[in-house]
Image (cartoon, rainbow, N blue to C red; front, side, top):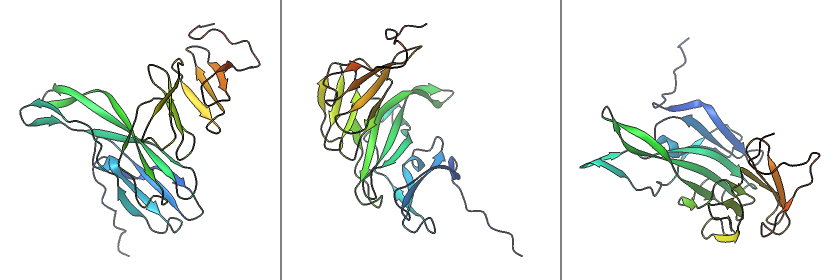
Length: 223
């Protein structure tokens, strides 16, 4: 018997590991693991027959400005797909974190920090994806296909059109995470040693301390 042939895998591209998201009994999306390969970081695979066949989908280029470290030499733009979420059988988003470089060491680009976060949206089950949309907030809670909520240094912001426009909602301290069950009702956590929980019923315009089984210490206080 002829030995099975291995499927070629590009460097940094692992088809045997990754995250998978099925949004119906037959349709789903697979995001392979990868490292240090910006071209592969934009490749996902979709299926409409329960995984019998998969089709590669390439996301649009991130609108990230290249950093020139010397004449005509640029730091490579890299990105990582950090999350996939479908709200129904058609609407979904992919969250991508960009990475920036700021120089070289031994002739190689050095890591400088994380850049902006971008979201790609689909309304046809993953067959086609929008151009990357910049998110102005982190962390961000994807409530549904259109309503997203997050924080900036100045306060709480939200969008009701899938990230095309953003509005300031209220002055609110930076939260570690959000959990909104709908555009109006949600909980936020902040704190250092012990989490501090607050709740809103009006989309984040007003917040009240959440009643927990223990007395909440002031934020950033260790006990």
